Image 1 (spheres, one colour):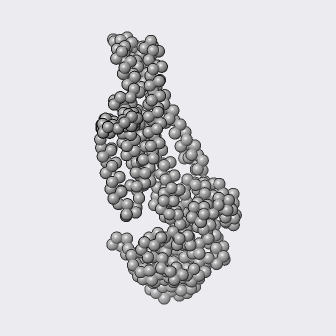
Image 2 (tube, rainbow over the protein chains, first blue to last red):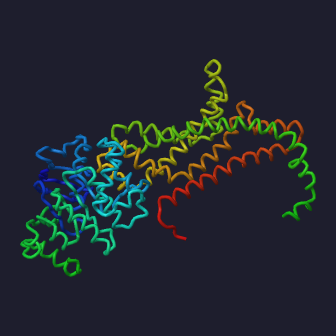
Image 3 (spheres, helix red, strand yellow):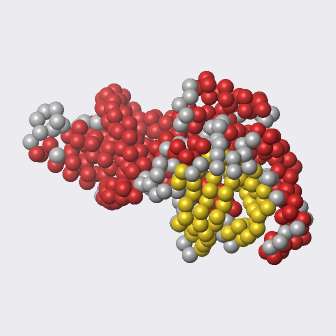
Length: 246
Length: 245
């Protein structure tokens, strides 16, 4: 799946969040977005999934414009999975139901088939015994892994990870990042918004530094982190380093 | 209290007019018979109220710009129905509608009294449901939509189940209230328990039937509330790990 964003503009009221953003991602590529809070990382991902309608510009998926007004978003969202910072599991449903809901209602698989998918994915990520647990009975790390499984169950061609470790206790971050490492091996296209600089450096094929609703600088992780060219990137990385986050 | 009340100067008179064993024995079977009608009205009105309220609440919570006129209509409807006392709607609908010359059985005050209850309580309960729908965090909708579920699937499988669980206590509050307001239908004719108690009171100049009616009402409303509390507590135990004490 190839994604192109052309001059994408998005504002919330008077606040401009994306101001003419251009971006391309090739099939199988893993791209991380770094930048200060409010730099537009989350909004960018939500626009790709059509959760936020864009104000101007266009987004293409395999050359097909998905951002047209009035276009049915559901067939597009089926191809794009998203994992949220706050997990957003359905609290009234068991893990099994969380995963199988869209499989049975959107992809119209039988309940048995859907459960099979859920079991296999849960087993792959060490959650086999949690099939019938409820979200409240899981740790944050487990909940987030279930949320990743829920997105993966739809066999998305593109996976969006929106600061998926930001709401976790430090000791739970590792187990979630391990899931993402394993996913990279499977060849899925991923866009990752993150504050984990080490992780971004390790997992990404390319890192984009967002500033003021545009991509200020992008390149291979080694270059971005060791020889940033843009003054704003340098400043940002210095600030982050000062906070001890890398 | 147990010791003090019997010393009140006219306690004997009150005891005889409100707590007469003889009158109680005589009235009780008639009151129970009449109460069956209350239960019937309650039983057929409740599903209709819940259905109407759910439709109103969903319509009011819809975000489709094309449904704007429907939203306005629903808001107007809810304002008007809630803004007028239930008893007035029972009079207006119960006497007014059959007045246009409907044939039996469509001219029954019982039917139109029930319809009045459904239309008014539907409006109250719709607001309860709407509060529940609004209380489900926006991120739940985002998660559901991101999986490719349509708007209506999101409402049906993700929003409503959470919304309804949350509003069960206020919902029960309205149903207990309905259970009592059923008695208002007697004002346009049907002989249900309150009316029967009134008849017995008038016949024997004794208030005991009213007390008996009150006890009969309580025998339904209290178990109803306790059962709901129990069900909710069980649900919480099932879906959550630990409780803060």
